[in-house]
Image (cartoon, rainbow, N blue to C red; front, top):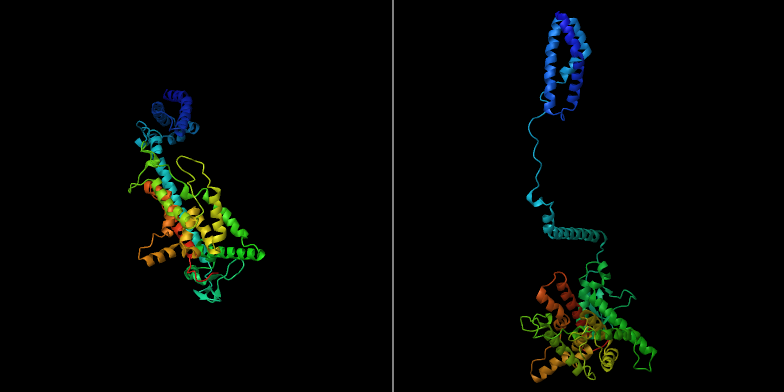
Amino acid sequence: MASSSARGLQLAFSPRLTSCSTTTTTASRYVSIAPRSQRIPNLRALSSIRNVSATTQKQQPQATRSYSSLNATPALKGRVVEPLLGTGPPPDAPVPSPEFANGGKESKVQDDSTLRAALLKRRMKVARALQVMRDEKKKATTEVRRFWKGTSVKEVHGAYEILLDSRALRRPDDKQVIRIPLSKGPLANALALEWDQLTSSQDATKNHLLPLTSLVSRAIDIAADDAKTSNLNPDDPNAVGPLRAGIASMLMRYLDTDSLLCWSPPVDPNNPAAPSSAIDDEGKSLRDKQEEAYNKVVPFMMEHVWKNVKAIIPVLDEHSIMPKSQDPATRDAVQKWIEKDLDAWEVAGLERATLAAKSLLIASRLVAEWGEGLSGKVGAKAAIEHAQENGNEPRELFGVEEAAQAASIEVDWQISRWGEVEDTHDVEKADVRRQLGGVVLVVSGTGTSKA
């Protein structure tokens, strides 16, 4: 009876055991996705089956062995893993920090300009460091030390020559020896000092390191062109060389747009907020400063140099935007002065000063003050001698600083209001004064001899 009951239980539970085995195998494979409520009934069923199976094995060992081999009891036993899954509710979703609550839009808008500025500053710093490294590497690998140890000035056949050790300084294009008139001793010494400051032979090919050398070479070119023109036209004393004529024509274009003749509108008492109504610490407007510079230059030139000129008018005045042209008689008188009355050194200096100051009038005033041919007549030399004879103080001289200030009135005005841009305005100031100082050296002289 017991045997029949065990056999009945075995037959009754065989399909269920197979199903349970399959379910347990599947559950063990995908245990991470099976809910706990679905797993507990299966575990209870497995427990009941084990109890029945144990009783059946005691009564019928033969059947138990057959049942075990048929129904993979070891597989059921291997599927029981404790714990099957961790318990408890799932964690909360991550919450963004307050500054990123809106997707970071507010923070991005707020810090966008600061970030760009920081990145730009860092990029520029890295670029400068890389450039310094490249320059140092290039200098260490390619720089050739200069072939001369020192410079000196020596008088040779009625002129000064600059010697690099024992070699005479020559022009790079035609290898002509540079000869300075004996009346220009300070220029010869300054030229020797310019070459003594060079550190390598490569520096001799850089024009910005040799401003005096380039200016002297220009004067020599003009003198050679004048001599050639005179030889070709011995019967025409009014013949003008093509190089001098080209320089005069170019400089006359500056007269119609001269920086000294471009004036700001006067102060408007009815509109104190207008830019032209601004007043500096001295109580002067920009128009007042421009008129002061004009009065230092133009009346002197009309009285002592351009005596046939009746008037030189501002080219931009009030609210005009189109420049006015000077009277044809004025233009002819100025152009004739450049072509006939100035020597080659003064023409070269006038050209350089005009390009540096953007003003033909300021350049003309500087050359008239310090030029070798004019200084003894109307310039600084004549003013000093006249004051000494009368026991008075000489008049105010027009030097490099006065010319540089007159050439940069508007720039200085804007700097006083808005500030100076580092590495821009300061560099421009120094460069203008360097160029004008070179002009004074080239045009000045004792007047004792000519080249």
